[in-house]
Structures are given as C-alpha cells and as structure tokens.
Image (cartoon, rainbow, N blue to C red; front, side):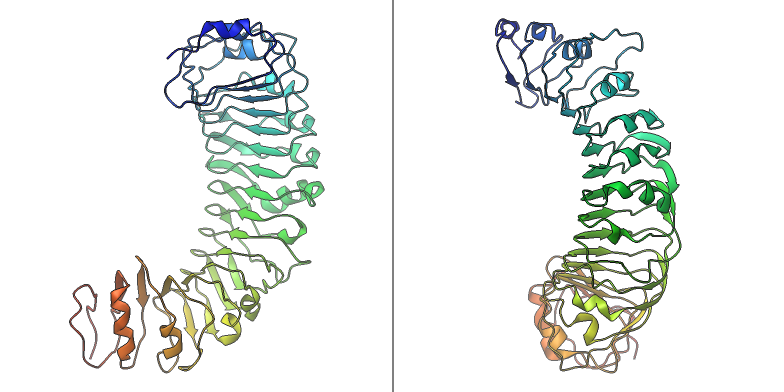
Length: 412
C-alpha cells in the first residue's frame, strides 16, 4: 500500500508516524514538502527504495526534531545533491539504521544539525574513516555507528562530546587505535558514559582502568587485539554490569574486582591470562554469568572465591589449570544452570554439597579430572540434564542405565 498523497494537505500536522512493517511504500516523499510544521516523522520499515528525493524533502522541514527512517531501504544520495538551506536547527533524534547506505554524501547534512542528541547509523555499508567533524557535535549523547565497514582510527572528536552517554562502534572490523589513548580522549565524559561497545575491531593496547567512568554499566571490548594485563587495582567503585573482553590476548592474573559490586556478566574467556584468580571475585553477589575458560590460569578456587556468588547461574572455568577446592561438605549459595570444569581439578574428592545444588538445563556439563567413585545422587541429575560428559577420567563404581550419558574412554 502506497502512502497516500493526500497527507500533503495536512499542512498543520506536527507528528506523522507510519510503522506497519513491509506493508507500506512510497516512490517519492514529495507529499511531505508542504508539512513545514512537522516536528516528528517516523517512517520505520516503509519501503523508500525508489524515493531518491528523501534527503531533499526531510531537509526542507525546518521544525523537525525527531526523524526515524530506519529499515527503509534508503537509496544512496548523489554527491551533487543540493540540500535546502531551511534544514531544521532543532533536530535532536536521527535514525538511519538498517538501510543500504554505502557512502554518506549526507554526512555534511548531518553535521549541519549541531543540536543532535541521538544519532543512529548502524547496519549500513558505510566505508572509509569516521569524519572529524563530529567534534562539532557538542550535544551528542548517543552515537551508534556499528555494523558498517568503517576503518582507520577513532578521531579526536570524542574529546568534544563531554555529555556522551553511549558509543557503539562495534563490528566494523577495521577500526583501530590504542585503547588507553581512546579512554583518555573520553575522559571528559567520565561522569556521563554508560555504554561503550567496541567489539570486533582491531583495537589494541593494554586495558586501562575503566572504573574512571563512574556511570559505565556496559563495556564490550571482545574480539579485538588487546594485550597486556588487566589493572592490578581499580581506583573507585563502579556501576559496571557487563564486562566482556573475551577473545583477546590479555595476560596476567585476574585482579581484585570487588569494586564492581553491580557486575552481572564477566567474560574473560579465550585470552592468555596466566596467573591466579583474586579472592575478591567472591564479593560479586549479583554475578549471573562467569566465564574465564580457555586461559592458562592456575591455582585454587576456594570457598572465598565463591562464598557470596548467590546469583550465579553460569559457571565456566574449563581449559585452565585451576582446581576447584571447596571440600566435599560445602553447600554453595547458588543454583547453577550450567557448569563447565573441563581440564580442571576438583581437589581430593567430588564436593557433594556442590553437586546437590547443581541444575543443568539444556546445557553440556563437562567435568574432567574425577578420581573417585561417582556418588549415587549424581545420577539423579539425569532427569534434568541434556548432557553430562565425564570422559577422560579415572572413575570406578556401577553405572546406571541412562541412555544419553557420554562416558567414553573412562580409564581403569
């Protein structure tokens, strides 16, 4: 169904929203030319693939404050397009995400709107470097350039965005730069920044002290080229909820993280960590997801590491040289959905209390290194576990008839 041309007669209209997903289209937006009172325009998922005049039209709406043209299959704008000088000076929200834009000749049009607070241009095909003119966008609070093909270093514009609350440049794959320098450029936003996503790029350098951002709650830096070690200590309490640096080249131990009392997700797997785990981990009472697997960590994980993890659901310390040493009678405070202990030790005996709390739902539980009789209660888990893998161990005792257990190569 085409957007009716009669909309152009509503010259006093201030809000127009069309959001019907795949059922509306417009070959031109010329019907909007006379809607000069329009403040809010939302055409989310309207097919505008033939509307080559889209930028010319929206730039002729002098009072526009909110513009959402996401998922519209917008055609690319010619470099020689002439934009109307009546462009809105009050545009605060602009969403051009999920389109087929390959090169934004409209960058200059965007930078004419120095009043922008939220700018979303994710999931396009944008190439080249990020323009330095972002330093003029002093009002910018939310910037999403993720899932494009941008490359080069993050420009110094970051230093001018002191009210920045969220920055997402993830999954461009070719953005690069030193992480410490980037954090220094963001220093003026240390009280406002809440979300920083930079994953799946080529950023490198050691991990600076991210507790400098007092309001930061979500930090994703995974799948880069970060090296060096985590800070040995953090300067002040933090609001961090998600900390994800997996799939990098970080070394050293896991330091005291007790200042991150709000932390719910901790993912440091698949690095080169080669030290011990600080007992401060046990102070993270809100932690839901803990994955430190596929490193070279060593030493014991004792009661002090786990005593206060009452919210924990996911626990993966596999493929390290760690030993879970909590004693056979200790009753943990958590009810796990998933536990993975492959290639880790379990002390001298299997911890009975640890197992009685264990719940495995549609997951794979890998427990390797047993040198004991499997306690009878363990087989009761078969009614709720999809898989229990006990391969490559030295176990003895009788096995019940449970069809889905993987017990290959149990050594005598």
